[in-house]
Image (cartoon, rainbow, N blue to C red; front, side, top):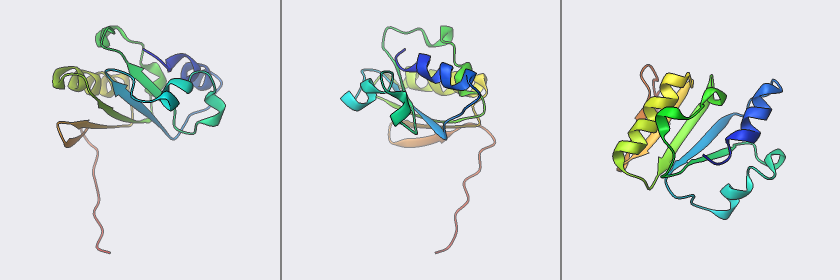
Length: 115
């Protein structure tokens, strides 16, 4: 996993970002790769779960109480496994894009308002 250590340090210091972006698969952008080196410039930290990571063994405590947005280019099964792992870790909201569909953790309600 890439990007989790600076996020853990931020959480241990008593701070919390508004949301965390998680990529499951091959890391998508150079900007994402820079997050661990310069976390003070990012209001929405990014974490990458690599194809070699065993999702069930990852320490996801940094996600407790946070909004987590998951996307990726890995298999459907691994993306859904990450969704379940963050939900079980205690993330407040887990929004996962899988095969063009947006999946939320149980209990999240989306309100639509007439504009």
